[in-house]
Every structure is written in C-alpha cells, then in structure tokens.
Length: 134
Image (tube, rainbow, N blue to C red; front, side, top):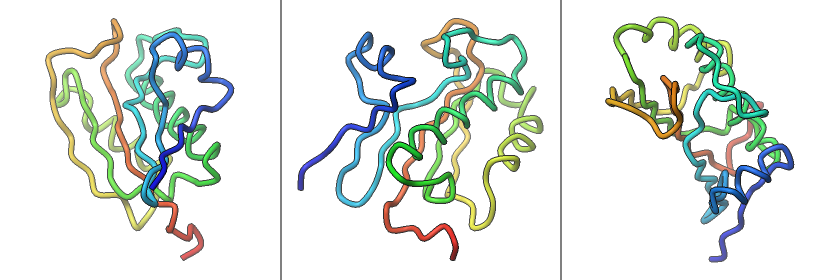
C-alpha cells in the first residue's frame, strides 16, 4: 500500500528544513511526528501549559489536513521533561482537546527534547476509519 505525506501549509517550511513529514498516511492510519510546544512561528513559550496547548493545536492542524479530527486519535505517547512537576497540568490540558473514547496513552519522562526549552512532545497515531460522531 502506498504512503502519503501530510503537510499542512503552516508546517511546510519546518518540514522542508528538517527533511521530514509532519505525518504519514499509510495502511488506514496517520502516523504523526512528535509535536513539541513551539508555536507556528517557532517561538517556544516558557509556560508549560502554553507548550502543551501548542502541541495539541499542531496535532489538530495536521489531522485536519488529513480530513480528520482529534477524535480519530487511537494512540498517544507523550514525552515529558519534568513529568511529575507538570503531569496534572498536562492532564487538564489534554482534556481540553480530547474526549471519550480517549486514545491509548503512554507518558514517558525524558532527560531532554530536541527543541531547546521544550518540556513536552506528543506523538500520535490516528485511524482514518474512526467516525467522530460515534
């Protein structure tokens, strides 16, 4: 089965600079590259909650480019610098964007992320077969 890159216009420059796809559609699923908390202009806020919202908004942007919504997510892995210090904040922000049935989720504490100042990176898999109304 063929694979196809999903590149929203707002992420095209970053995709080309890093030689990567924000997401790949393959075999009925969309596999998203990890999204950190920088905004679309590349600024990394100091506030962890702002980073978390930025990451979810980038994921939403990518899924919408694929004709999907956040409800199509079936799996999510989150990487945290200082997990225990901001887990409650992340959990509250997560619930601003996701609703039942929630995707399977693994949270991992890491020593650092590629982007300087990043405290969160979210990697997700979505299904093109999910009907967001059911």
